[in-house]
Image (cartoon, rainbow, N blue to C red):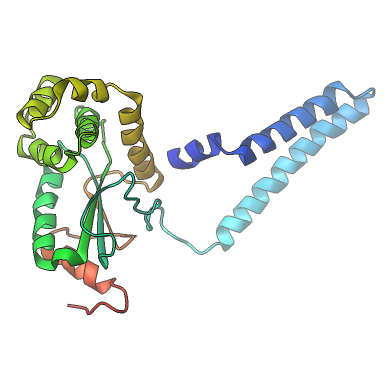
Length: 250
């Protein structure tokens, strides 16, 4: 029961239909019955159904082929919402989950730049937030600031400025950085406090939780989770080894 699964269930009519049917049905069965035997029958049926369901779930889990959580990218890349550098028809794809105060993410950014220089238009890069607030208290604020900058078409410029000055990411630094980049500061501050920006960051974080991402950076190479080093050579090797059949391997 990950955060992503629970969030999806809360807005699903199927979930609420089942809850209503079970809760209302049992309530009517218990309170509307004219005999104690009927009440015992309803309660017994609930217990038996629970036990049978638990057994079936365990059998189904045991029979299902084992697959590690988060092996595959849970949500496909979507240009209408994702931050993408590169062409949609690029045969190679790197999706990075990270946060801006993370020193390892700064190192990974340099590696990604080297990959892009090597592969050129054949690779597209996607950034998503995995703001681990328990480790980096300013991570969420920095992520929301980058989304406010994105509303003015300056996401990647703001991203680079955050990585260039990781020691200074307090609220005052966030606004100062927007001014230095020539953003509309009044609009930036308004967007920074908007529920839309907070929700945008939260959506990425929920994806990360659903895929059990507990450290950053975490990469997905052509839709599959990358395990191992994330230097440029390793990323290029992973990209080409999982390339479509039409792409030559290097």
